[in-house]
Image 1 (cartoon, rainbow, N blue to C red):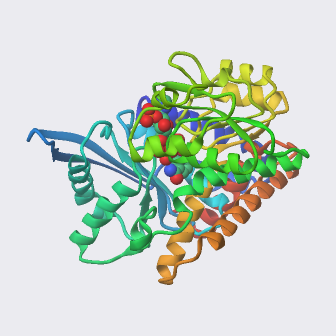
Image 2: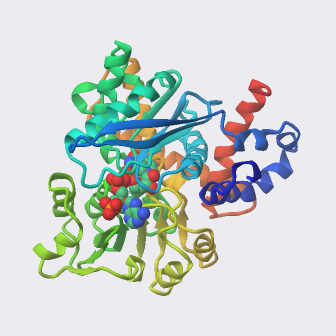
Image 3: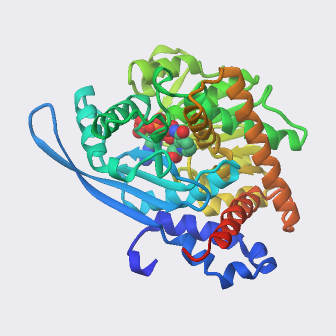
Length: 433
Ligand code: NDP
């Protein structure tokens, strides 16, 4: 850490993983002798670049672009791009670090990376977004390739942005290299279920956690934070399984609807009208918009944090436990603070950490790459069935690993040790590189 200055999110993510590896390191001292931990914590390559672009008023703007190519032991670097004003190198390093283990858990041949920019897409016109994406890719393209580094979406980067990025990549390289980006549109190399995959996958994972304790979604109250890609599809799948989603949010506040949120209406509001969650309450009499306060004060049996890092702290965890929460599944990356995770584990709440619970997105990106490589496209049902099986396998693998290392039911430990073991064993095989 000392050589990098202040990178609190990366420090938090690295500490959380390293702390839970103790039982694995005790069993396999060669991990320590071979410097695997030191090598894992140092990205293979970090790229920081200028992104100049011109806004609609003709003014020149300059943002900063990032790509951290963290670890390629298992395959090409793979991980999303985030466009949000809070992005800096420490945030991208935390996300890239998590991505290494998440990708390992999917069982697919994917290394770990992450990227993005401090560009704020909010309020920008479509033409501004396009010019920004083109400038971003003009620099980034030289580092990418279907066998080298394959970005996807994240906060602020969806199908539209992936389209502009792919268009510029194709234009600069003069190659129709479908496998260089995932999250593409269905007409140009995208996969069925990729849009839904992270949210659906989180719910499939939580379904497994509930099943392990004889419980299920049907008839349960669910709170989902966020109203973006992950939140909307997690809420839709939870609804489909018979649960009632009683609250959703965005960065301005949350809406509560005791009779159940109309998730389709939220999706239309966010995806078609680019509206704010408070507008939902304006069109639904029973719903109430709460501007200040915590969404985690709304009583529920199942909590799905699907917005951003550190959005669920110890106070929120205590409120959830007091209100009888039985399961928490992280749709977002590291949304739960370490103190809050401890509260859930101590209280016997089933807790699904993001690197396992939200791995469905990258897993389906892996399936998109497989389809691109074979110039094939699979049906929605086939792809969804594969996603569901991958999530069940990840859950069972984490559970078995936790048990094997003397921590039954602790899926945080199970995910960290299982992901680490696959990457570390490969790094040992490949030598000191
Ligand atoms: P979106 O941009 O589609 O949605 C993000 C949502 O979170 C929005 O409702 C946004 O509200 C809210 N949000 C973002 N930042 C903040 C903040 N600082 N405070 C409060 N709310 C905030 O992103 P995604 O749904 O794709 O991503 C959500 C989370 O899931 C992230 O942690 C991401 O890393 C993770 N993830 C995403 C995957 C994917 O496939 N997309 C894969 C795996 C993990 P507002 O509009 O007001 O900003």
